[in-house]
Amino acid sequence: MDDNDLSKPFKVQFVGEPAVDHGGPSREFFSLINQHMQRSMLYGSTFRHNVISLQKEEFMKCGQLAAKGLLQGSAGPKCFGKTVTDYILYGNVQCLDPTFDEVPPGEMKDSMERLDGIQDAEEFKSEASFNSDFRFSHGYTKPFVTIEDKDEFIKAIALHAIIYTSLPELNQFIDGLKTCGILDLVRSNPEQFRAVFQYGKSILTAGLLDDIFHPLLSPEGSNKRAKEERIVFNFNQMLENVEKGKVVEELSETEVTINLSHILMFATGASEIPAIGLIPRPSIRFDHNTREERKLSVSTCANILTLPVSEKMASLESFQKEFMFCMLNSPGFGNV
Image (cartoon, rainbow, N blue to C red; front, top):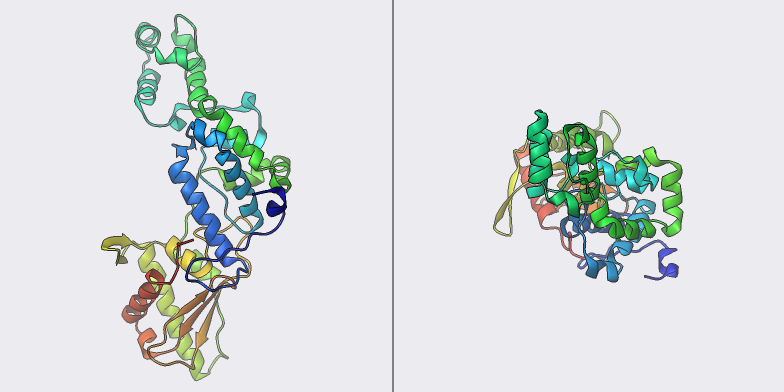
C-alpha cells in the first residue's frame, strides 16, 4: 500500500458476492482483519515479539488498516489490555500503571502471582531474590528484593512483559495509525477512543438488536401490517433464543452455537456496533410479492434485511430454520 492508496476509501468485494461496496463489505473486511490480528499477532493482550514481521512492516500495515477501518465504519481492534491501550492513547511509558493480571500466561506470570500473595517479609525476600532469576532479563537488577520493593518489583516486571518486550511492534503499529491523521485525532481525544482499542467484551443483546433494526411496516390496520408484525415477532423471538444460546447449527460437520454477532455480521457486515454507529440505520423490509420458496436476502451495503412474507415465515420454528439456513449458506460470506 502506498500513500496514494491509503488516502482513498477502500472498496471491497468478496468472492461470490457481486455487491457494490457502499459500506457493508468494508465493515466485514475490517472485522476479519481485526480477527486475524488478534489470532496471529497478539500474545495475550499485547503484540507478540516477531523480528521477521517487524522487518516486513506488518505491524505498520496493521496500524494503517486500523486507521482506515475507523474511517470506514469499523468498530476498531478492541483487543489490547489497559496498559497497551494507555501507551497507544498517550504515547508515554511514564504514565503507565501495569499489573501482572495483564501479563501473558506462562511460568513467569505464575511466579509473579505467587510472589504477590506472599505477606511474610523474609519469605518474600528469599523467593524474590534467590528464586526469581527472570527479573534480570526483565530489567530489574537489584541484587536483593525486599518486601518494601514489592510494588515496584511487580510493576517493573509487568511493564517489561507487557510493553518493553514488544515495544518495536507497538511503535510500528502506532506509526501506522498516523494514516489520514488518525493518531493525532486519537491523542487529541484519548478517552473517547479507549473503547476502540481496549479489550472489553461488547455485550450485544436481543433488545439492542431489536432496537437497531427498524421494520418498515405497512399502514396500521392493513392485512399486510398484521402479517409483517407476526414476522417481526418471530425475528425478535429468534434473537432471544440466540442470546440464550439455544440455537445450535451444523457448519462443515461442526456444531456451532449461533450468537448475536453472527446475525449482525450477516445483516450488516459488522460483528460489533462500530464506534460511529451503523450508517445507514439497519432496516427490515418485507416482500409480499413472493413465491413460497423465495429466500430472505440481505444488503450489507444498505443495511437492509428483506424478509419474504409467506406461510413459512409465519411460524417461529420455520422462520428460525429458514433464517439460519440462509445465514450459514450465504455465498462468499467470510471469504475474501
